[in-house]
Image (cartoon, rainbow, N blue to C red; front, side, top):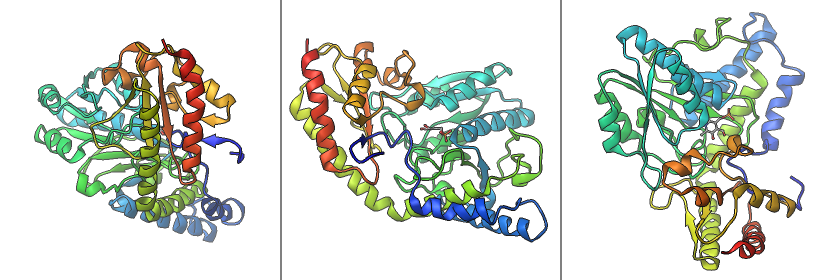
Length: 387
Ligand code: PLP
């Protein structure tokens, strides 16, 4: 970002931290061996690979043998859902899948793809704050349920799920739980062994690491079929030469994110509070999505009541962009599409209000002045659209 522009879309992606770039450079320029080769160059790459795996495992309360590198969060979600579904069906014949109604499309679309392979899929509804309805989860779990997917924290509204309770319930029905932890990683403490999820998806580019690298956590003893075949890498779990520079970058980003987590969280809480107070002071017809639930502090999802204003998120975003401010209307992946967000629909927002929704998300460099500037920029747009 140039200094005159204000970036409030860190949940979409973050810049790569300069320390992360510095950690990666040698693995592009001098230590470029293939980690599967047995000569010295290969062994040096292998050492870096395994040190990185260890750092990532330690950062999320896992064992290094439980970490498989992937091309990002999307691949990790695909691998978990499809890999678990096929492995469980082979072993038990179960062919029912449950996914929360507010999952990222990497999960929703993987579940949909599995329908083409004979699996049945149901959505678990959420309450008005975006929390899983535990009564509905109980009702939907059957003796045929193989896999349940519930994300740790939502990318659009920031709601954090009570994963340990959900895991308990899912395990009581002898099903497996996949947890997308892409947004929670580095934002709140993440202890995978304590939470008890069977698989979890991680991604580097939300924590100041490079794009195109992530990891799938597979709890010891859990079987998941491979998604990508073609080599014995990653303990036969994911074929393909490991991308050592990006993996080293992911580990460097993880170390820093874990070290800064407490501080970043406190700073985000101050920023979020400022934005919410300023918006609520100025307009009576704002809703903060996810209110009432435990939430990620760096995401503020604000909806303007469709009965009070005629606005849509896309034109608000374009207007903000013209004023040098970057935000999002929902998830980055769905912006550009005219469909209203499935997350806002699931928490019960009507169509006009869902359209008049913006997501602001903060990063390490976000300042109170930037928050004030964003609210001021919104002011001149919203007032003219008041009904
Ligand atoms: N899951 C969630 C919750 C996300 O927010 C994202 C990215 O937006 C992904 C998965 C996909 O991760 P990646 O961009 O690394 O493929």
